Image (spheres, one colour):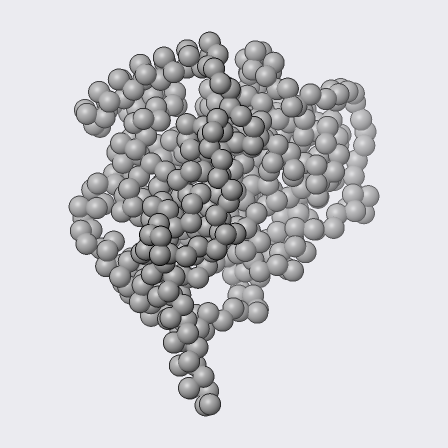
Length: 485
C-alpha cells in the first residue's frame, strides 16, 4: 500500500467513525441504540436530587426548615419583580445591577440569560447558520471523537446529563461540534464542554450555541483567549491575580509561594468555567449571573474573594497538597458561607479593587480574539483528518511553560524581599463579614494561627522551590492537563 493509499484509508476510517458517532446521537434514547453498561452510572433518585437536578451521596432533608421556607418566600416575591422587569426590558442599569447581585430567581434564569446575552437577536441575525454548521460538522469535524468522550463525562451527577444519549447529552454534542466548525480557529477545547453544559441547563440547543459564541467572542467576556492554543488570557489573568495577591494579601501570597502553590494549580477551573465544580453549584450560578452582567473582571474579583474569606484556614495548611485539596475539593462540598454572604463579600472586593485600580488586568492582545471570520468553513489538514496527535509542543505551548517558570521565580524573589513573614494581611483592604456567617463553618474548624512577630526571611535555596507546576506541564499534553482537572 502506497503512502497515498494509506492516508486515504485512514481518512475513510475517521469519516466512518465520525458518522457512527453522529448516528448514535441521532438515535438518542431509541431502544435500538445499544449502550455499554459502563456508559451509564447507577441510577438512584429517591430523596437525593436537589432543585438543579444534581444527585447527592446522602439524603436531602425530608422537611424544609424555617430558613428554607423564608428563602422560598423571598424568591417567589423576586419572581414577580423579575417577570415585570423582563417585560419592560431594558431596565435602568442601577436597578438591573441591584437585582442581579441579589440573585436571579431560578425560574426566570432562562429568560434573564437570554436578555443579558441578547441571544434572540443573535439567532435572528444568523438564521439557518447553526443548522448549516451542524451539517458541516457531521461531514468534516475533526473534534467529534474527543467531544463524544467529553460529553459523557460532563455533569455525571445531574439528571439532565446522566443518561447516555439523553436529550441534553445530544444537545451538548451538537453544540460543541457545530461550534468547532463555526469558530475554526478555536475548534474545540475541553473546558468548553462545561461552559456549554451549564448553558444547556437553562437554554435550548440553538440558544446555547449563540450564548457560547457570545461568551467566547464578545470582548466583555473574551473566553476565546482562555481556550485558544497557548491560553494567552489565562496567563494574563494569573499574572494579574498574582499582582493583586502581592499587593493586598501579602501574607497569604508568601505562604503560597513558600509551599509551591502556583495560582495555575487552583485557579484553572475558576477562570475557565467560572467556578463550576469548585464552589457549590448554587453559588457558581450566582457568579455566572454577575459575570453575564459585568463581564470578566468578576472572575478576578471572585478569586480574591474566595481566598480572602478562607485565608485563615489556608494559612493553617502547611503543604501544597493540602492547600490544593482544600481549594479544589472541600470548598465545593462546603463553602462555609451562605451564597448571599459570599456575593456581598464579592461586591465589597470589586469596589475595593476598583478603588485601588486593580479590578481590570492589563489590556488583552490581539491573539485573545478570533482572527478568522466566524462561520467560514476551513478544511482541516491531513494530520487532523486522520486524528494523529502531535508529539511536540508548539511555540505557544512552550511559552506557557516559560511563563509559569518565570512567574514562580518572580514570586520567590518578591517573597525574599519581604521583611517579615507576618506582613499585615490585606493592609489596604478592609472587608467585613457578618459574624453569624462564621457559625456555619463547621467543616473549617481548627486551631487559630497565633499572631506574633517574626523576622523569618526566605531565600530561593531555603525555600527549596522545585517549580513543580512547570515540570507537570512539561510531562503532560498541555491542553489535557489544564482542562482535565
